[in-house]
Length: 244
Length: 244
Image 1 (cartoon, rainbow over the protein chains, first blue to last red):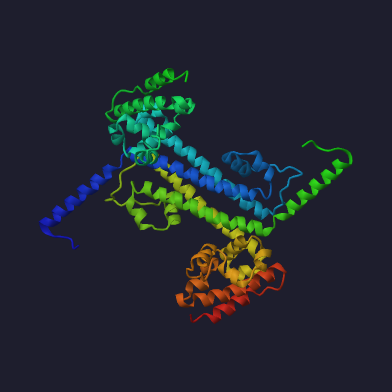
Image 2 (cartoon, one colour; image 1 turned 120 degrees about the horizontal axis):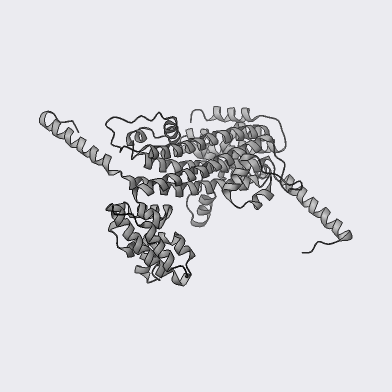
């Protein structure tokens, strides 16, 4: 399209500037929170993929250490630090210095990815504490961020009914329920919350409902810049479901 | 099982030692080559996954740079180096210093993964030059290593007929051909060889057959520690198919 001239040009330029301005304002903190929590999930995927490869490779040389160290992050950092001792009667093959360097380089990058994950979790933690203190205190960093990411924005999350909040992230199971008559899901993302993790299977529905109620309230408090009472909300729930 | 005693114990221990010795010898250079080339593929996957995330995130801040830099590795290193200039009339939102640090940290790890890929390719290059110089010279580092990985060992690769070498890595298409009568595949991994990449579509079958023939010969030369003639083999092919 040829650029217009004269009055039309000024009109066009003004419109363009307005649109750019709107776009600039469209990326709020909730967008960053969504990006960061999805990114943490991707880092996990990448670190897992490379860790499996490292183990398969390293087990040719020293299978005993790999079997004795189930945690991927610990395993990678042992090799990076050079404290990966090989038993005298190991079943592994000897390797050349170059083979070893190649493995250590891989381990180093994996250890770095786990460091990155921690850095991003700390960033997410700070950002949420400032942006949505109630959700942060009640739901925790990761669960809270995933809820915001799933809803899209804090505004959307605040507008959802608490029964929708309860099922956020369980859309697949919900549609299976609606179309095939399978059992309805009791919880989505909030299942990862410590309160639900601790609850007995029979109580999960009840706990999930109560937790979703409070999260829904917390989201409204955060969106409308209400008072801070996330701690109180959490304590109430903890007290109520202590025995379960 | 309780450990046996006396003579049986000596017999048991000797057997155990023998088995360990065999295991130790079972990991030859070809195993390392297979591991390394699979690892390079995994690094690509991981770097791609994280690069897509970085772009989605970074585009909130400076979409223009992301659009102007299609190469993932270059994009990550620009941000890492801090030379990612933002146009004055950018459509991106301003970000807080913490948001920026989080993105730069991610970019740094991605740039590191691309460095790791280069290190591993150099290691693979050296290892193959020493272990299978003919395959290395004729097929190239990555194609050669993938063929060894697909065959399992250099021994297995040397034992395969050249028509099998031609189709290594195209097993899926081959079985589709056998079961449904679809067109038979003309090439597997060797399609990635520069000679085939340059060839016209109509000539690909012919070039693939000739290349597989020579690779099969090169594998036998390498396995039986024959003379080095990988360069000559490659030159012959280059000359023969120059016009195609």
